Amino acid sequence: MTLAEHDEQDDVEAFKTAFLSLISHELRAPIQTINGYLDLTLAGLGGELNTQQAQFLRRARASSERMGALVDDLILLARYAAGKLSWVKSDLDPAPLIHDVIEELRPLAEEAGVQVRTRLPAPLPLLAADGPRIEQAVRDLLLNALAATPAGEVVSVSARVIPDMSGVVGMLVLTVRDRGIRIASEGQKKVLEQFFRDGAPAGIERPHTFGLACVHIIAEGHGAQMRIQSAPRKGTAVSIWLPVLSDNA
Picture (cartoon, rainbow, N blue to C red):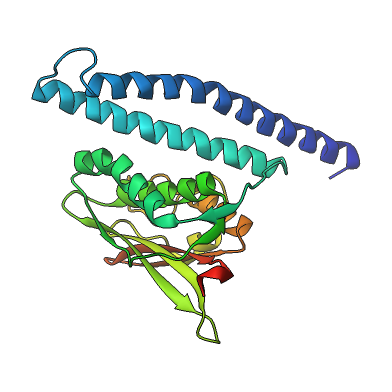
């Protein structure tokens, strides 16, 4: 490749990143407006709803929430590609955040016929973290699991605390486990490739896998690790290993 060709390729990539960021931001505002009016309608401010109307609106709200999550992922990927991703970290109790994401996506799980189970010790240790980004990572993990899990199966959300060599609390391991299509070992190595698909039978693909790229980026930005365990007929478990605040000791 000549220098001119290399510069042209860089220009194309820069344009793609800027265009993706612009479109994502333009989509975010109307999605937030739609969510707001759906919430008001579900709350009865526009009049009493019958059971079927409420069910239809909850499905619309769940789909809109999923679209919003995809837009947030596109914005994160665009900023990461442009080297403009920043973090605002503070002391964070992850428990309310995790529960909020589960409740937010519960209508989506119900529509898919998937049960979400939690196993979280109380209390969870504090993190030095960017709250909205950790929330985004948890949402992506759960969306990835829900999208891949067949109706009638279970998605589990669990956490455990790992002490360091001195016995002091060192890591919080958050795991989302599904019973869906596996991610082959070769695919796990490619998780940073945007819109990657892997390990599905003919005609079927594991949806929202690119969300795992966002989880990886967010984990990396917190000095954490993302680990994937996946096997045929056993599904996939994706974990984030987050360092906790030393004050937890």
